Each structure stands twice: as structure tokens, then as C-alpha cells.
Image 1: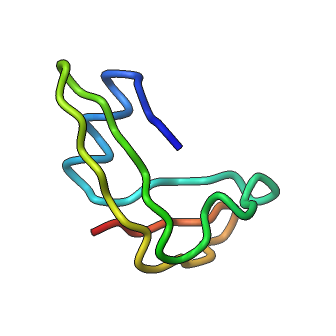
Image 2: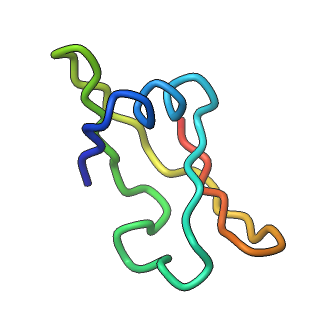
Length: 63
């Protein structure tokens, strides 16, 4: 999975977490999967380490 939107990419890199809608969580968010984030022509690869259910969305924690 690649995130390429500048505003969203910088937020994910700062917080090390990703918010996913309640019904959009699927197998690409499995633990141990890699997420590639492109910000200013630099690729950052983060690994999914935890997933938590909030009130109306999932929080995917990255490392």
C-alpha cells in the first residue's frame, strides 16, 4: 500500500498511526504488512504493529 498525498503523508509520519473507516479495514491492514509513504521524493516504509477499534473507526499503529 502506498500513500502519496502530501498532507496525509506528513500526518502519518508524525503520529505513526493511520485512521481507517469502520467498514474499510481489510487484509491489506494485517499485522506485519508494510505501508510505503512517499513524501517529497523520499520513500518511508512503516510496518503495521497494532490495530485498535475506536468508537467509529479503526486506528492502525505503525512502526
